[in-house]
Image (cartoon, rainbow, N blue to C red; front, side, top):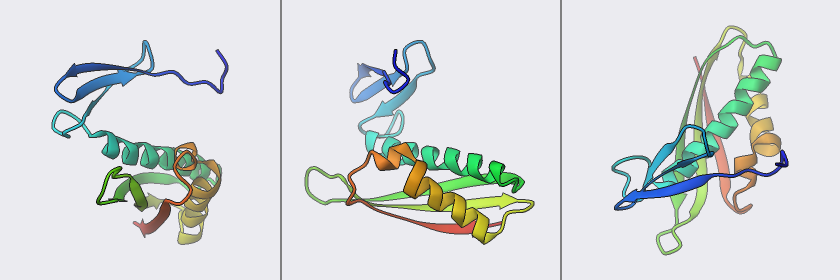
Length: 136
């Protein structure tokens, strides 16, 4: 299998509940109603946050910034009418570490959003992506 090809499988369980993942790997549960698991649109927010979060961790570790904590809040604005797709995403990065200052944290986040995060780059280009940074 090519390293550029990904495969996932999704199985309907009941109602609007599905479970899926990489065959043979751990499964996640998604619920169209958001009761038994994140809804697909919330899962998209989580995927974007996890993707940029992984980048930020790797970049700050390469900077030897002594990362000790990272929490990302993700908010998405959706259209009122169908398809109720996202028109804007906003992230709040809560970053802490021994040698992390605003410049280093912003550099890591900017690199992720503009260059590395494959999830964000897979979204429609007109979706506005913004963020705030909280150090501490």
